[in-house]
Image 1 (cartoon, rainbow, N blue to C red):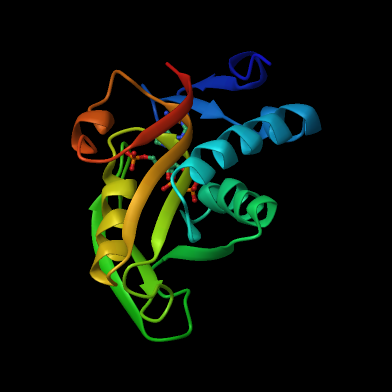
Image 2 (cartoon, rainbow, N blue to C red):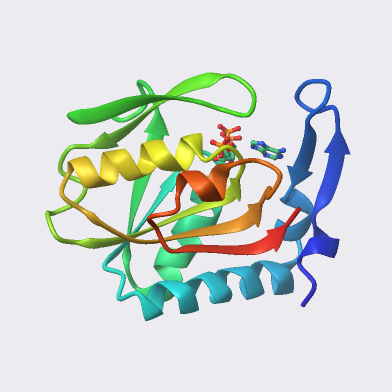
Length: 170
Ligand SMILES: O=P(O)(O)OC[C@H]1O[C@H](OP(=O)(O)OP(=O)(O)O)[C@H](O)[C@@H]1O
Ligand SMILES: Nc1ncnc2[nH]cnc12
């Protein structure tokens, strides 16, 4: 299965100079979507995951089916002001813009092994912040699974202490 040929690249979105990797063209292909989730599930299985976490919004599209396919729980990491319970939060910068992420304080029990899944690794800011939240709750980050890695940005370097899977590289 060639996942790269299912991804559409749109120049100058959401601002000039950004080549946006659009996964909607992959997601609407049932076979490709299943293949991507199955590869992530193998990775998560090998690392004895207890839970799957993913950042809003595109991370949900991968992390939730990954958790479901493995019979594991899913923990949402959301942008600020969206989670109703008591939260822990962290601010971060993106390839474009700035934001704040939050997790429910009771979402993870100390020692639980968490796989974090997201669609794309760019600067690594989103995932570094997600890792901070998981670790602050005492979770063990057992691995990081991405559909896409932008190798021309320093994301992988930022995550060098972690086990990283990416299915497609640019
Ligand atoms: O490695 P980074 O530089 O942090 O960039 C990658 C993140 O950026 C995108 O999310 P975005 O914040 O655009 O939100 P969305 O999923 O709600 O579209 C993407 O889904 C990743 O989560
Ligand atoms: N180039 C890119 N394409 C799609 N999503 C992104 N998130 C951060 N950078 C991105």
